Image (cartoon, rainbow, N blue to C red):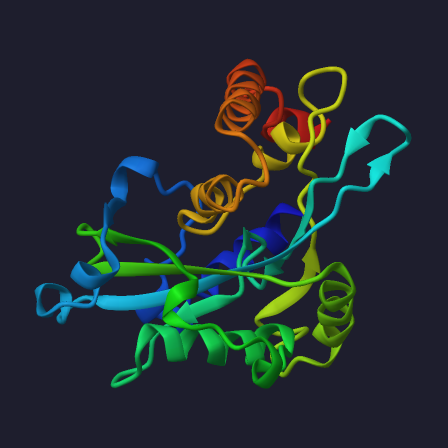
Length: 239
């Protein structure tokens, strides 16, 4: 078993080597400074690499099991590297970040951008990671629940499905009775880059959840991770 893992590690990164530093798991919130959209697009960061990601969502007030308000359906995805994130990717040379956001939505989830095209007014926030010479642009768009369900179905036809993206998912936007399962447990997953921060900012920006509920879920997640940081390791796997 372990011999197989060593062999996989020895393969290396190949043509992905140039992109290896982007979207790593474990990137810290402190690594990303918030900047205005205008500043992010200025000559100040013209030498930086840019990337765009987008959050599509639909409000949904369905009550699950007569207990939990669904609040909204938010579209996230499992990436090829096993990390969770939003549809998006690096901006091509000469491409505007908004163009890149729409292109990536077409490629990764098969979105019909003639019907759901993002505009500059859909910009939510931009970040700069000076350590990586990277600027991140985050967009959001609200659709109806039937439209959201249609988008989910079209994902299976997306050009990148099964390669760069391995499936979409909806984060649970409620906290269950034990104070951990639901959104706090979801936040305990491994996210690409600052995708977890983008999720929290997105659901606050669109008033899907109040700030105090978001902070409570995040605190619960961090408390659980601290208590259980040593509960899974090589010793347990070997047993």
